Length: 157
Image (tube, rainbow, N blue to C red):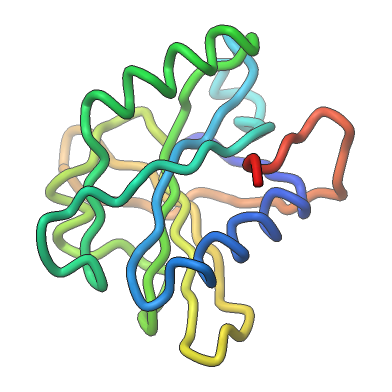
């Protein structure tokens, strides 16, 4: 299990993206320093990169990120000395827990952050998960929101 840390300004940026996309799901990538793959230390999310939700239908309950967007995010991350270590998405008017659809489309190793967002835009919960590869089930991973740092970079405006 890989614990996750993320700066509070990145969480604020996630909340802003979720609020702007409401009532549809927003989605994107989590970036961490390249080579930071030790399971002994927490995975540090130092940047987020939004992606278009390319779901053909039910965008209120589903998100899809195209392979083209993933390749683009991996290239951008590499230029910054980072790598894509996970994905984020919002759950409009639903808890911050993976859905069956989320579980069926997830990959092992990656971190998945899910942010609950409500119609009144109130602060919803944020959950961190990873897929158990042998059972194909999500498990909760420890999530620590840390003070903002100069290293963290919110999504571009």
